[in-house]
Length: 297
Ligand code: SF4
Image (tube, helix red, strand yellow):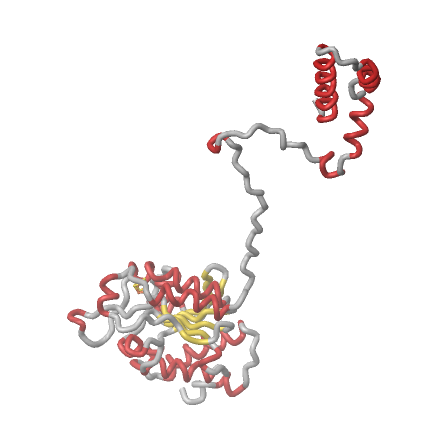
């Protein structure tokens, strides 16, 4: 019943009571009777005059007040969660830095954690086309926290420069980020175990995935074992391309091998591998570069 009908009903009942008390109300009663109940047309007209938003939105004001526990809970509007855009390149430096933290605090190999001085993350240009990968940090690298800084590292730098790069233009890392421990904490270096390399390999793979070099150079048979599970001698692995998840990998001797074996023949083998790398990168090769270690052999 509308408030209008309620008012009519109330006035009608009041007039009825006054009439029962002997008060003459015929004129008023007759006028009231002519008003009659609110017609359906009148009711619709009132609805039509209501504000547009009230006509479209169902009214809930008349709902009974329920105890708190029984009141319907307000359901938050469900908005679609925007999907994160896939990482396409992005800032390689930032992504490498984000990876560096977990690697530096890694404790997956407790025996290496106990003996290491530094975790040797890797160094170089995050946008490098060329990446060199060794097996593990040695004593010098463990002390300085940078890969290939000892005598073998100095020879690697000469090789890089002979190729026409600055050391800072390429990226250098190891399969293993912590120096393999020596008995009694003694000096020297040992070959990393396959289990140690497989534990650490995901970090290197993540570095490669971020840098996305056009070519990798695996330095030494142990690096090839850690990267690709290859156990053949380097004499059979070098001089040809391998693949690591779509990235070309050139295998060659470790610079430490060249320090032990100073023959020009062995140096030429490494250099020929580097010429193949330059060709893979579509970089110009001078005649002088092509002749390195040939005329003196
Ligand atoms: S060698 Fe690699 S996996 Fe093992 S503790 Fe060091 S960073 Fe972690």
